[in-house]
Image (cartoon, rainbow, N blue to C red):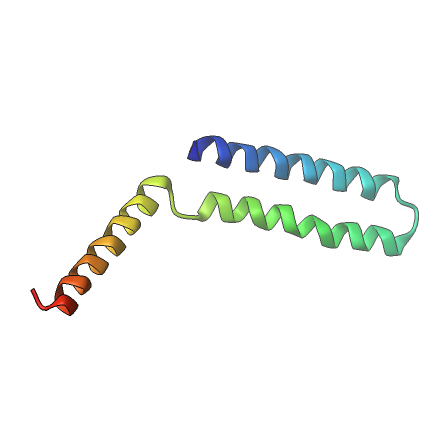
Length: 80
């Protein structure tokens, strides 16, 4: 499921980039064109974050480490 969501995010960001580029090329007002260029940053940064973010195994290991730390802290607090 994680892979599906990741690929769906890539596809939707690519579609958003295509839409914004269509707006840029069909706009004659320079103010609107600059606004479209500014909104182009959002999907580009999103794709960069998806590519450079932690992978599935790393996120799973991080969750396990956090759970182990919490369990150790609970044992320590309960005095066992």
